[in-house]
Length: 337
Image 1 (tube, one colour):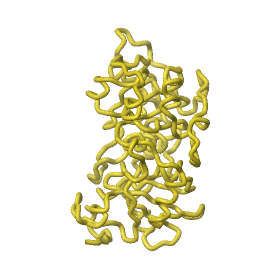
Image 2: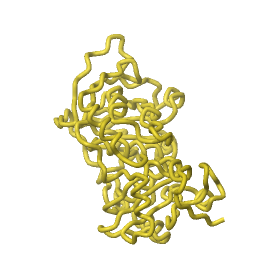
Image 3: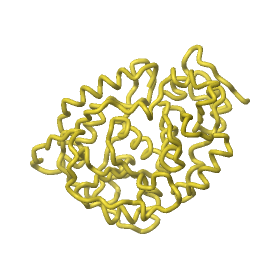
């Protein structure tokens, strides 16, 4: 996201007119004669199945425990009509075996290169809505995500869906790796879900996405905290992945991987607070925390942790991240080589 959010606003309005169902994509095209796509919009809220809360299963002091579900919760609820379970791994991994009821979604459809050439940016709303249409999602669906990489892709995908207004998105804590280690059942059968015509009708949520100008203004502002989710080597400027290496002046470094245990689960809330507080990432309700990495993916993981698990009120993901900042002439940079 560079400079302005106007492109996202335009694409959000385009999506409001509806998106054709992708009947041949993922599980939506598995049936010989797919049923006609049902038209749904973000204004539709009627649920077709009750989905139990996850709070009783995840009791580790998180600010919003319902944003995480356990593997046991997934095993019990994945087959419910209103639950859309999404596998975010590579297609070949999905085909080799996945959780029963899970649909595969191509996460490449959720990102794009923006008009300024910044790679890995959030895709337009109509493209995201099309991806949701293909897996049979509706605005009132409970979407549950899992991957095999410390919930990195899950956190990014949750953030994308929430930018455009999907209300109920959750992450399976512990990832595919935990599911397999627990010996839970695996299938090669693709889920059979009828494609829909998902459409976003609300404006994008500006409260969780930041742009270049906002980060410029945050430098030196005591009411703002900038958190760098990359490795210490990238932060110092020794591992250079853009034209320039280093970090945003005054940014505090907390490698996103430190927020998870070895089993892939997130640390308890108390440990997460200590992790970030010890690094200086502290925020009152009147302060805003901006997260960034290379392309806004690792930053989305830190955004999820700080917003939903630690409970900071104002957290935004700088989508352009170092892909934009490190390549932009005139952007201020610090190094610690």
